[in-house]
Image 1 (cartoon, rainbow, N blue to C red):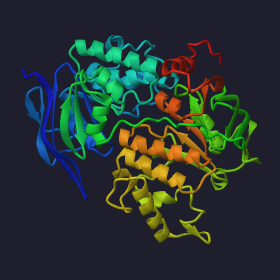
Image 2 (image 1 turned 30 degrees about the horizontal axis):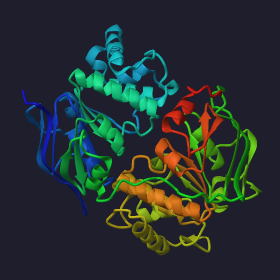
Image 3 (image 1 turned 120 degrees about the horizontal axis):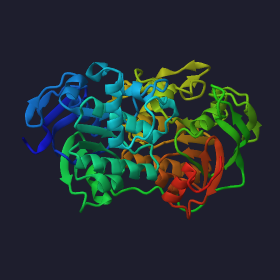
Length: 504
């Protein structure tokens, strides 16, 4: 038996106008955590889709456990012992933990006692301490991730692809995940770990492969390589910092939220309770919280996507509590959504059409109430050049871009309307260090120019580095304030989970 669980040799994949992978080589030893690093658009996702059978290579070979294979679908990869946990979880909230795990795999052990015993056994392996009959909608992010890992283990995976597994976890949850991975590694499981968080890569990986502009450019030893060296291998520049420098906060209020309340759809605990906050011109107000504690609902209520049951929202002194979403945008709110694929882009439409979204009533894309397509195309080209969106042209569908390039397009669009307030919800989630640095610089310049920014981020270093003030949200309430100049990620994580005694 070969020492390698997976070997990729000479993998090349071409799309119209783009070579996504070019002669990539990757060898993953059995029983190791092998990290894959690279810029957005470098070809990591395409390579993993090839390994998981979603796409087929134009050239090159795949070898699993010493045997050359050709995967025509994910089912083929699963049969060969390869599983994938996607960054955006593939779980049905209205089903139980057990039902999610069994869905599509009923033929293996049925759906009775034998199947549930196997689920319980695997749950212990990954540290999932919840009842199998619990609805997934009641789980936190970390436990949802564990359910996803159990899903692939239940189907027989011994080599597991983890796509940005720490993107939505707080530091304590990252530590728990790494403990799980180390335990499973000791039992012979193999992991391909895709991440942009270079310090975490160095902490968990046994080996690192770097992909740059579609090809593998080298490997690194996490015991000796520095994060700065990894960043240089990935993007040819030093690791960026989110630090903003001197305060630019003024006395001018831009956004005031008073007593904001929002009921849940099912009559349970309110989603928002008595939320008060003020964002001033030249200020970045950061909101910290474990996902599912009301940050999403707060943003959607401010944007008019949800209707508050109590409280008021004012923008530059004008009451917008009952205004529609478009009216709020026209009043000067820019919006970088948490989920760009759901609320930020039309994936099947060209980039110039996506430039128009949310701005269809304003120049330069609208003149006299009519859409000006040529103006939209020209301004999209400007955004592409100014924000380094890597694409063959403005007519390419948004779905053809990598996640980081999609995000840069959204950021460029939202900054084009000269907003007075920018709501930035996880603005650098899933983007590489190069794109991250660019987005940070956009926020720094906008802050210096007097823009008010409401920042929601799961990246605590980003939140601490960019914010002038931080508020902690727990169970729909703002429960604590933190000073970015002195707070540590560990202290912030404790407040976010209620471990510091913050009440909800």
